[in-house]
Amino acid sequence: MERTSGRLNAKSAKKAKIREDRRRGSLHYKGMQEQIKIGMSIRFYKVQKTLIAYLRFLRALRVQKENPAVNDGVVWEGASPPLPK
Image (cartoon, rainbow, N blue to C red; front, side):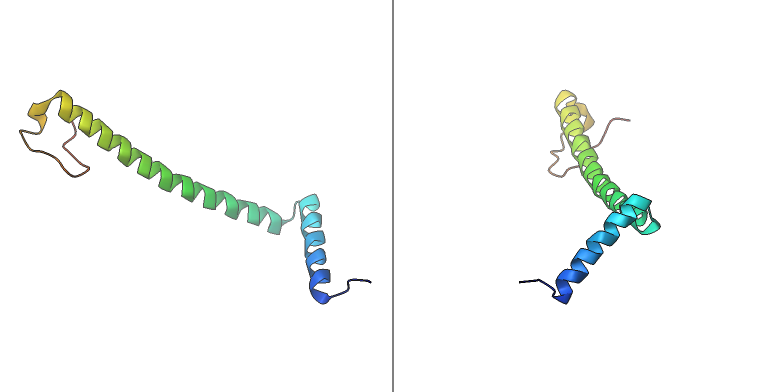
C-alpha cells in the first residue's frame, strides 16, 4: 500500500524545505533562529529579575540581623527592608 495522502506529502515536503533551507542558510531559517534566541533571552531576563529580587531580599534580612539599628525596631514582613547605602 502506498501512502499518498496530501497531508503526508505536504509534511515531507515541508521537512525537505527545512533541510534545504538549513543547507543553504536561508533567511527564513535564520529568522526562526533569531526568534528562538530572542524568546530565550526574554525568559532568562525574567529569571534574572526574580533572582536579583530574591538576593536583595536575603541581603536585607542579613543586614537586619547584623545591624538592628538599621530598622529602628520595625519588624519587616514585606520583601523590602531598608538597604544600606
